[in-house]
Amino acid sequence: MNEVDSQPTDTFTSCKSSFARKMKRTIVSVVSRLKESRIAIFCSLLLLVVSLTSLYLRYLGNFVPAGYLSVTNEELLRRSTDLDDTLNFGARPGVQTITSWNAPIIWEGMFDPKLFDQKHIQNQSSVALTVFAVGRYLDAYLGTFLTSAEQHFMLGLRVTYYVFTDQPEKVPVIELAPQRSLKVVRVEKNSRWQDISMMRMKTISDTIESEIRHRCSYVFCFDVDQEFMGRFGSEVLGDSVALLHAWYYKLPKYRFTYDRNPKSTAYMVTGDYYYHAAIFGGLCKNVKDLADYCFLSIMEDKLNDVEALWHDESHLNKYFWLHKPSRLVSPEYCWDPVIIDKRDINVTRLIWAPKNYKGLRSG
Image (cartoon, rainbow, N blue to C red; front, top):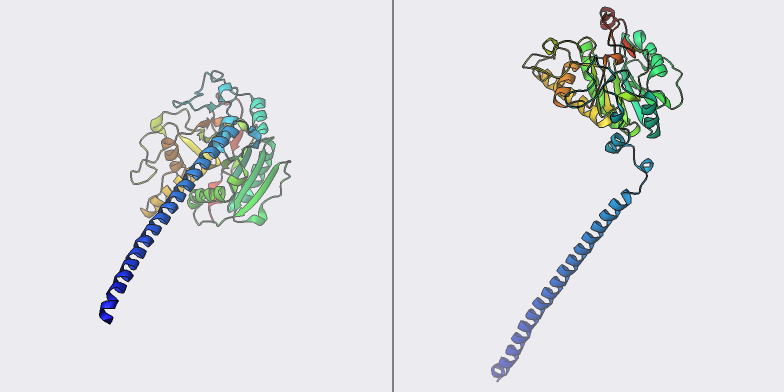
């Protein structure tokens, strides 16, 4: 009797359990669809918000005054200070005033200094000047270099001098004009002067990254054994700036002293011009790119037990061959008084100081 009575009960329980499982699966399926639907709706709404925000920002950008945009926007800075269409390329018929890739070569008489200064002051252009004074070079040259720079370099603009030296306590105190400052950075003295010359590229790159790019629009790098003699102004500011070497600018290319060693990363068969590493500059990003390229090339050569003919200058020439400078400055901006033929030099803006390499580079 008990066995007969239990059969309907088991059947009912089994049906109930089956129904429960089906209902559970149905509920899970519905909930899953609802979640997917909610996610889809959320993603659609998010995409709509992003799209509308992008359109709004583009619309708003057309009405933001240039003065409110960040000076770190290098493309905006370049456009707002581009005065190359005012240059008079025919003012100096006796010299080359433009390259084959349409970069201007700046000579006296080509530009209106007041116009360039006014534009860069209006756009709040700022310039970092880097110079290395290591070992005996500090006593021999730094005082004259800084004093003369205060008289002629980028007058009217905000300027920060970065002096890299192994003897910070010996850096002379120079009276600086308003909007001009000086920062001393300690560096180690390498045992060989060649290494001092080459390793400056890493220091320049590191300082641009850590500090200069946050403070200045442009950076110009100088050798310390020079003296400013005349205006060295905003007409030279550009994206990427190279200097024509005073001793080579009139010579045929086959006489250029490129590194002809195929084992060196600086190896060149030919080039456009011969550039002088005593001065180079431009926007912070471009100078950092140049310095990084030269440093990595130097280190690769060291691994292969190779040293370029003219050290960092050889690598700089290779870089400017591969990455054309947007602006060249004439030998007026770095002239050697020893050169007898100076018919092209209407204004001497900076000169090489007398060299005593034997005394300076020993010890």
